[in-house]
Image 1 (cartoon, rainbow, N blue to C red):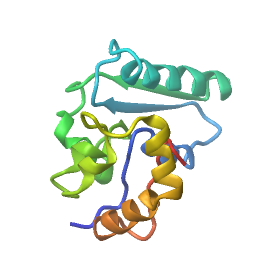
Image 2 (cartoon, rainbow, N blue to C red):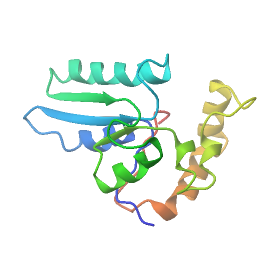
Image 3 (tube, helix red, strand yellow):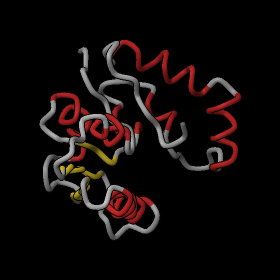
Length: 148
């Protein structure tokens, strides 16, 4: 299956930001975790507040809790088809599309943030993700990660 758009974490936001015009724009962002979840959920809410402040209200990212716009396991497809404007997502949930995607998310006793970031930038992680995701991403869409 070829996808025209893809979102990891705030990547759909990055894709959507390119289409912002002079008029105020509301971006509905479907999340995979509730906004009440410390760090993961609250970071998505904080992102929306910061973007709104930085754009003087011209871009308003509305954080939607799991299931409000689509089931969590359908965020990838929703963003790729345009049914959802943006997604707050983890690549581990894309296992149905990219079987090795759980390697790019947290797992028990796995590397910490520093080790993961070192692997992503210096250990071939970014290149491995590009190779594994290439069959399902279109040429016109470059996935964006919060690590980039």
